[in-house]
Amino acid sequence: MAETQPAQVSEERFLIHNLVKREPRAGLAEDVRRGLSSKPKRFLPKYFYDQLGSQLFEAICLLPEYYLTLAENEILEHYADEIVSSLDGNTTLLEMGSGSASKTRLIIEALMRKQPELLFIPVDISASALDSSSRILLQSYPQLKVEAYAADYFAGLTEVGKKPRARTLALFLGSNVSNFDPEEALKFLRALRQVLREGDALLLGADLKKERRVLEAAYNDALGVTAAFNLNVLARINRELGGNFDLRAFQHRAFYNEAVGRVEIYIESMRAQTVAISELEMEVQFGAGEHIHTENSYKYDLSDIARLAAETGFTPARTWLDRKQQFSSNLLLAV
Ligand code: AVI
Image 1 (cartoon, rainbow, N blue to C red):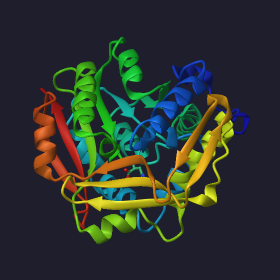
Image 2 (tube, rainbow, N blue to C red):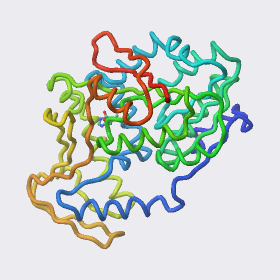
Image 3 (cartoon, rainbow, N blue to C red):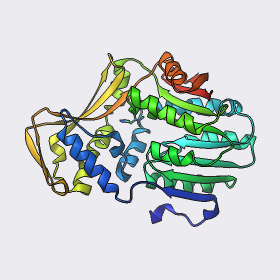
């Protein structure tokens, strides 16, 4: 990480707690073993985000087909001041799944127009993304302090909840909520609600249900970046667990399952084959056309969001949409 540590950043303004397991491979190994032994085979989406995967995701966010990022940016560019004006007093900013934190800047700048200093608490599974994004933010904003947590969401929330905080605006942007199954979304929002006090707020970015054509293009981009992002999980198993996946013998698949309102993402074996994973002392058989399920991306309508809020201790205060009405930013108040 040396290249991401410019000398100018004062360590007094930056604290990073690394809660990612000491043995980061242990979780991966366990979960890969379980996922490849189950029927149908599956991986957990959090394993997309190693250093290369995080960068591939950043590239996805620049793709014309992946309208989500542009649409959410448009909303935040237009309405950041309005959004932060809903909170009174000195506000701390908490962001779950901050990644590169590029959209966060718009909220940070709006808060800084209201108050002289700001504490930013980003929580992200990727320590490298967190480290570099925090340092870049600190270089841009001398009035900013960052206390970062490299952790999965639940472990991060448990730690964040241990410390008293000023009025808090929590951000869960980029439609990260999409990658939770409905039960997990409830569990996550309830855990987040627990670390907030009444009157705090959550800005929830949620991708909206729309035409199949638009959704499927977003997850099957012409450059093949989403395919690389998906197949990188196999490359990661090769790198970290001594797997011998032949990446050319697998392909990316993504389609909209309208009945359940989600884009489903898979890796498909293009032929019958056996893959060995040396660190797991495991051989895995694949049939031709067999799928590994890697991710769901749930799409919402505004009534889904209102229901989610009501079931998790929030009340919707206001929703902003982009001009094409593809994406929603929802301010939910903790009640
Ligand atoms: C991070 N998450 C909101 C993305 C999504 O759209 O579900 C992950 C992604 N997967 C493929 N492309 C983007």
